[in-house]
Image (cartoon, rainbow, N blue to C red; front, side, top):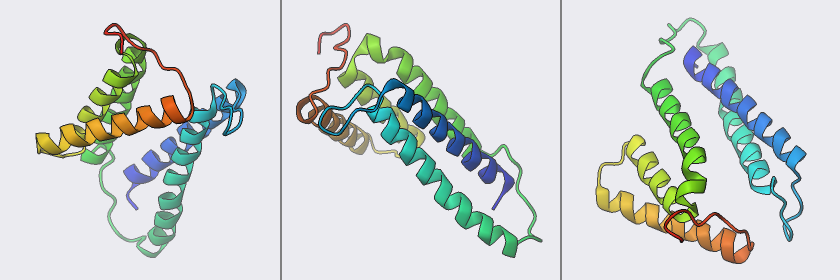
Length: 153
């Protein structure tokens, strides 16, 4: 495993743990009556598990390939991770102003573009579908209220 990947996995794991512990402080609630920290708790668990599994797997493989030359830390992979973190930071800032639907739709459009998808039809369709499904799940099924934003939806 390259040094850059190991560092990124470790940092993302600790970010997941930090999100998890802060969500516990906010109050998770239950599945029938989720608290304000319910969704961040799930995100923290998912982020920690998603980054821990490949880290452990690649650390075991790295012992076998110890003589291999390590790559530079700052490469395209690290830049994409930096872009995604910056995008999520801006998302948190504009969420209240733009509202749930519009901010989620724009978030997924940008994430698909950063992820390397080139066809706009694909990007717009899947951004619309993900935004619609998340709105239905969280607003109707779980009954959560989200900010409407300056456009009123």
